[in-house]
Image (cartoon, rainbow, N blue to C red):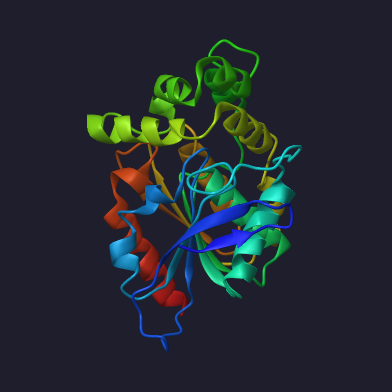
Length: 272
């Protein structure tokens, strides 16, 4: 799989799912994982989408198979955006359909605002406009902040204690819950803490009116983080529409991956 070297020295790992003829020219798809997760979280989407699209699944620095960040590296929205632009340039991707989950959706919104020529559309799963203050307190687990809790308990234990806010456990199998915890625990606590501090400070609401790319919002109507904010997206985005999945909480990308993938394909077919 390709590795894209950054100016700072480390490289970003990217899974490429390409089963098309060389002359097929459909707009490619970039799938961005959420906080402390990795490209494997999109596995169940790929079979449907890769029938007609080339799919690119990068791991952010410090996640999955990408290198850890260099000493002194600061996770900021600008630094994360630069990682993704380096991936697009390194793979000669002029323009992509963006699929993002949770904070991966926030990254897509920031890029669509700053580099509208690179983002053809956005499919956002479980994506909040910002992390609500109530959730910040819950994620802190009695510590001063969520990042302090990750350093104190480790990412896996922190994830296990807060999993119900990241995945609807009434609809998720025990095997899926355990897998999510194990995969997130692969992210070192210091990296996860720094990344979480970065996203805690982001509020996308002021940017939404200027994002002209078409946006499909996929969310369970019972999500404790994203559901209440979908109306804000719909009101503020010039070309946004919500597809709410009834009776499901957070984690629709994992709970109903095939349905989400079909919704994305139908969305892109209308655009193309």
